[in-house]
Length: 391
Image 1 (cartoon, rainbow, N blue to C red):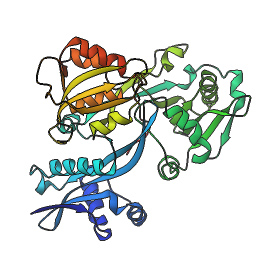
Image 2 (cartoon, rainbow, N blue to C red):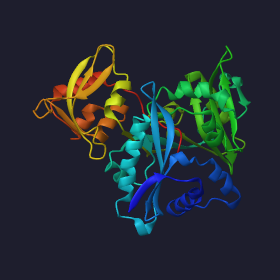
Image 3 (cartoon, one colour):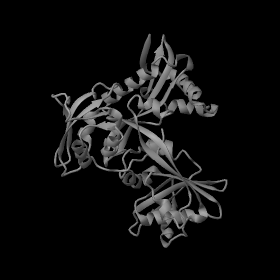
Image 4 (tube, rainbow, N blue to C red):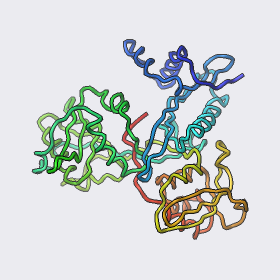
């Protein structure tokens, strides 16, 4: 008999042991009690077979920016099974359970970092963002411009940096809304890092950089710039570390233009598929989403979702001139040739902004009449996806 339920406090150690085995790491003995104390039982779920913890997952409570609006998001992490219980459908049951739980929580979208993209695609999650990794000789950075004089080291203080981060993160789709706890426990747990900020002539922070210098490498964990002036100033500041470091490493959004802006653009760049996303509740997601104003349209859409039956079916997407959308059941069943058809993964990709409807149509992942695809192109906003965090 299989039972899925929240873990009890005394079961958290067994869950951590399963994570250590599945993800091949060890929590240092002197850190174990603190790690266990930080685990929230209401976020920990287990599949018990005859009373034994066989598989588990963690469901984290987040908010994310999508097209400039905050959405409640369920972060799925730590999905693991003991080998003697694998290939018995336990993870499938846990993933369906997570979707039901997120829907009940009002979390209309879910993110995860996959061990396997093909595996999670089977359950409706879709690859939504890349990270661009740079490896740049410090000597290739431009000399420090005059603006660099306005860069100063500051405290590792989330309350100080968050307004600048939030202004930056809201420009993208799929970024995290950071809580005070997240800043403290996940960003600034890196105690060896230095933070420096750029302020404009009015004294307003327009950017910051968090970094560490070690073994002749200038490792930047985060660089946020709200203006070109701030970007130049921060890179000028980093250039001033040339006596200490030979190489700069940095992760950035997929559309980051740094190489173009360097005097010599021949630097190492790697585009790495990063996180996956999934719409949990299609109708609720559409109701909260800002569509393009002044481009009203009505589109019939057949969505397939084998693991969240409340999404599976025929729908009418109606967007008014103010950019408000609704997704209502289509009583006609969308059975004729006038309806578009897609799976929940493609629906997620085009609504969150990872791929345009035209691309999905050309790839065969969105099927149906071209005029309906063009209508979606008009009403769906375009915004680069990005995630600077990890969980």
